[in-house]
Image (tube, rainbow, N blue to C red):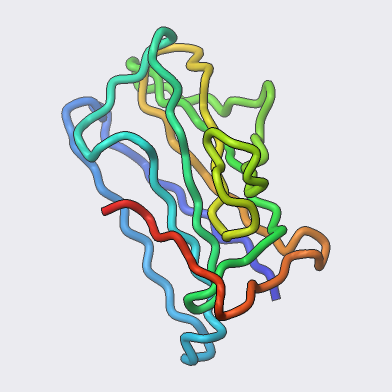
Length: 158
């Protein structure tokens, strides 16, 4: 049964002075790894702080959706974006959002169709600040399916 998890973090008055890491941990009801849905996300940027401004190069966002160790094809993966402005105020980006992430293999950024790795370029940055990404994954009205065990899964770069 699908559930929506929401987290709210209230920052101190001076968020620019703090480095923050949020770790979310959960535990499935069923302990069989074969039946656990896993979602991993990463970007094409290294782990150093990234300064984003309206003139920044495109950022590529990836999401790997697997059931156990096998990719999930035809899932609906969407990307929402919130902007924390340099003055500490926040705004939800709505124009053009949420963005649909693709696993179609039609080229940059998605090179392999149906491998369970969904991707999207973020090309527009309205203003400088901290960008917060939210991924939403659904079964796409029961059309998502688990790939055959024999197909390769391309893992996130290390």
